Length: 80
Image (cartoon, rainbow, N blue to C red; front, side):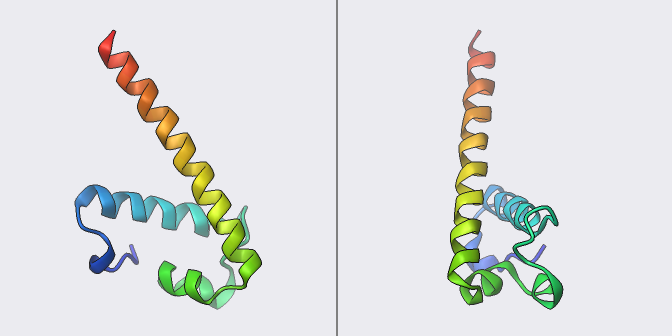
């Protein structure tokens, strides 16, 4: 998507960045609307209001927690 190569070292990093980009641009959050929506994610994050930045941070942390729980459950399933 909009991920600059300089911040994404591997294909897994790139995929995670793209997933986060899509997640944060989802209309239900309303974080990135209008003309800002078309700009690269890092540019949006660095230029947004502090309240939007904090909300985006909370949303990304929640998604990371969910991904971690999902991965742990997958690993447990494979070990059984």
